[in-house]
Length: 266
Image (cartoon, rainbow, N blue to C red; front, side, top):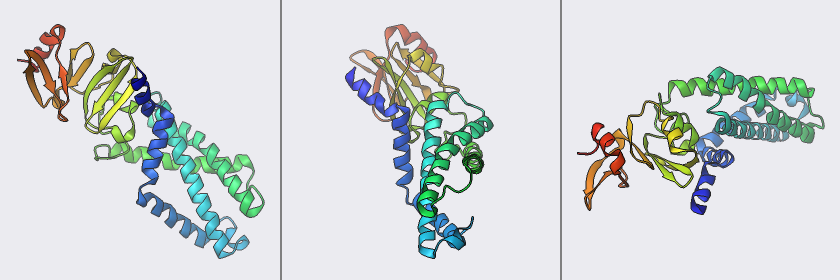
């Protein structure tokens, strides 16, 4: 049980958000993009910064703005996705709610940088929040549109078309073709082609979230996706299915008929 609890930490929303941030910001392309934006805006000097700051301080100012606002916005967005991703299904509602929530920390970041660099927080808080929120909504809208049009791309941060809802409960890095659901104490181990994650829920509830994935329950503690069955074999007279990674799951006597009906067991 202790092992299951420790493994489940990897499925906690805050932990998943932190892990996704580490993965995202370890991508050199992300950091390069932030640097390019900061450089371009720093040279242009919008919002009066060209007149108020020399070139060096102005570049540092916009680098701080770009890094802090993007970092906070991304972090809050990922956390909201992990916590409310299953609840808020409509993408335009997500744009409005997540954009408004993301605007708060981003506004605070801009106010802090302004105070340090300019000695003022800039626009009145509400006006600044409104601007940051509109920008945040625009960024989230682009992400939603891009996600819906490209969800079949391997490695995409969004899940592929018609992916089972159960995948919304696992880390982005572990989302892939669903292979199996395996009970571990009070948890369900969600097994995909890209990893394993323990989720605190009942197997019956997890099976209801497999969506259009064709599968069959072969044991009171095991459900397996039919496309993920690499082999069907008998060991010491007991039927088992083998997953592509070599893992084997037993077919219990009570579920043997259902397995045969699904073409799993001879």
